[in-house]
Figure 1: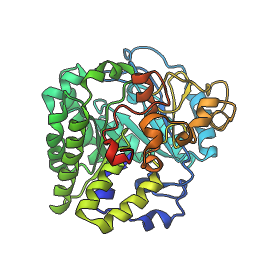
Figure 2: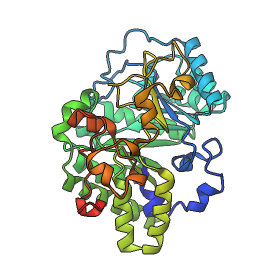
Figure 3: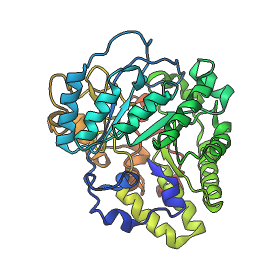
Figure 4: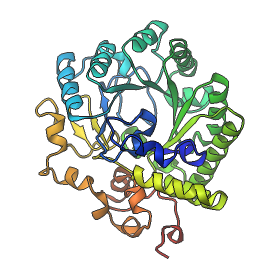
Length: 394
């Protein structure tokens, strides 16, 4: 996760993170990516069920009707373990988390144990009543996925009216004072929609947006051919920075982040070197705090069936099951070879990644993409768009 607004628009200084000792348990949410202990933010795909049929769903979501593998009591036991372990954030995801009737109860349980509770949702099921319930239990944030304006979004979601229902969900959150933001997955089908997303942020007074690079997993694995090429990705990053700066200079600053391609960090730094060398030094320090991709270390995933993965996109490798063994024991087990190696990926990555001068601030980027493309989880990330000259190997 790269904070474009934090880095490019100077919204965060290195001293901001140092003030809290860079400990995840003490850092406010907007500084959590700069923690030094990297206690894992845990994504729980609490259900595989969903009311939409998104073409890029990494969870291979299924119909709404049915039951879930982890019941309410088991989920509370799992949350207790995560809280005791020091995981700072519980991200309830899916499928669509709002199809579970116990979402509010479980979010309340997480906050009562000192965790921050957030949800990732398509937004269509957030009624006024549900927004009020989520606010009352102390939910920190609601991330609502949009793939563009109405025509493009509804085509992605394969359900007419999904866009309008998502906007209603946003309005309902805002009416209750819930912090809400947008999530947008970039690909060839919707890249032209990015300026529209920025207009929406401005028009609806939404304070935050995360732009996700495509990860080749779930139904998203069928979209490899629709990922942007390297030149297109660079253009998108410049566009996102330009749009972020324009809002900032207009007195309407937003929190803008890019996710799942840590080449974005060096790219922002290189642009800052050209535009503001002094600020570039601070940006580089913050990127070192960030450390790049944190799959298997600073982020982890628990699937709807209890299986533990390095992140929510990489389900080819399972390290254990919380229905059989606590997450905390699984996560720190040195006998789980791949998980142990992920704690220090720099020693194991190959190809361009191994030689890259930015390895300490990128962390070798996304292992799921490397494995999907090359069949080797330690190969270079094919989505890295930096040139050999830029990474210092030419």
